[in-house]
Image (cartoon, rainbow, N blue to C red):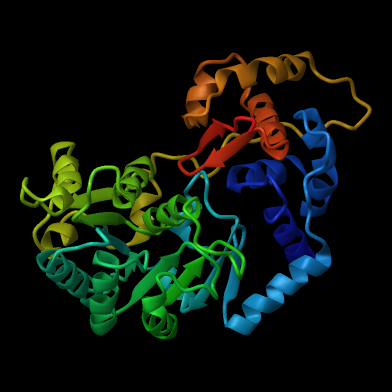
Length: 374
């Protein structure tokens, strides 16, 4: 319990995102050691005031709140953490699951699409979701209005479904899906990354979308406008090496433009569930050998130096040069590495310091963006 409290404190520490969490655990022997080192790392990144670190009491209260909600916490290093989600370079360090966590280990397919879906779009979502669920493939979606809700309802009738939500486990969004979320928790699974009480703000939806893509072997897009959240989920699916499917639509319907564009770029043209079943593996393990991503972002290759060691020249140089490579537009960490001469461990150290100092933001897809001063 002490170790889990320390892990939760580290996860909820100001400035510690999924990538920084993994870098810290790669550098330090225990979560407690990482917590002790955070103030010094933030100072090295240029922050005068130490980041806010939750107390053990704060962490214990969050554990108790999840328990009262009937949710189970699964940490990244737990044996029952969803195996496909663990492949993400920005996998959530911890997820709360209300319902059956074993569903997260099955061959899951995501079905996502427009909130203002047409009647035909809803029917297609229902047909595809029902047939996939009946075949033993749970459907994951985001509990949104429109396509998401239709897919969840149909999957519940035929098999099982998983809802990834953008806020806390005790916050229902949209409010009219309160009954649907309760039924999914009872007969499927609800997954949340945020602590209880967290409102579903706009910045939380990309994080939710990357969980949808990360849990699934493939993502089916039905009615998605250009620059929609569904297309963001599709991009995550491609980044994570998952199969991508899109249902075509009329060029006169703006809701079809995103899906049609995905098909032009190589997504499987999809009319029925049979098109999906032909192109997704039967088991999640089929993705492991050919995964196009690494199970963790660049980490520290060597053990931490004692505090009184002289600072390596490479690290001093990287602290000056790496910030100049960053901009407000998100950049993949791999791309930053290609444009500098620093080792992976030094780059990871500098990015960790910058995030803890509040100068950069780690984003889904193993990307970072410079936070501009207000």
